[in-house]
Length: 442
Image 1 (cartoon, rainbow, N blue to C red):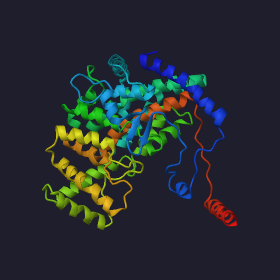
Image 2: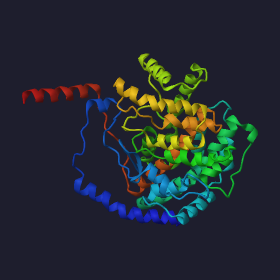
Image 3: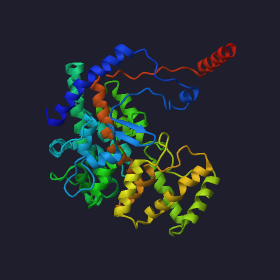
Image 4: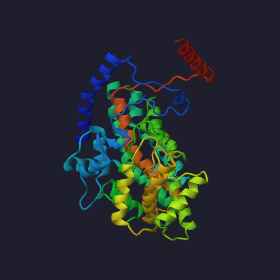
């Protein structure tokens, strides 16, 4: 075993008794109640999934293994002369709950490099798509095509102990994570910059820097890549992409099936496409202002006009958060340092200064603060990635780190096939009626 896998195995052995004890001693205890609005409203807020990888605190934002995002960016080792940490180091943290040393990360970087050879047939699958195809459809198909490489699938057919499911899943997950940035960059160049041709990876570079190189981007896009993948890596297990990956994997489908399904869920306009919708709205705002940077008063008038017409301000609000999304803050600080004079960032900056107060005054938004999508597209646009459709593919590469870390632990702890019970509308109506009658009789 390499250092990470050996460390992970020791963590698994420590954790298994905790899950077994909860089931044996507390399996029948009630920990939550379900309302009609939660049943009809997409199960929002129902405590029915478990993950130790990340937790979304309403007032602190996402925590990876207990660490806030600023702590993660501060504590994880960084490449020489880089501002942002190794993405490989985040994978170590997500799997083990420990901040790796520089030596441990560098060892993992080498392991990732050894795993990133992409079979020729995957390039053929990508090349077979028409040039006007959506990058998420291509990415999903490319990941699915890799299923023939699955260690889990081949070993399951031979017969293996349930206690060893995690090991083959780890191999598949790490292989896939090493390859996805290469696949993503290839899709980008095929669709938008065929003149670049196929760039082979640079063996001297870490995952983030190599992705920038294959995209044809100079510094500091290597730090942009690291930042983007890290801040999008996980967001609890209940969001569509993470939950889809968990659901499919719970049937013991291998990670290639599960990740392809995760990508498909992320492609929806209510989930991963939000960042491009924000950028499209900002471009429209810029056109309406004839390129002029508005004063705060002018922006306030525009925001009120937008709200009074029944529209929303995209990029503001969140289902769980009740403060500015730390993922937004990380990107804002990067912009203030590297691109303070960027035209679109100036619009974002003025919006940040006026929108929260207006939304509080309006009184309809539970959270008047900006979320991650209010900023992410602007950063990509500044560094020349101006193709909206590709933003969600970038999101998918980052989100894979959290989803696959969770799946490895699902297998290690023997979590069951997910199978919630459904009821009919008539049954729900009768349940409500019965409960009301009982309340009146009391």
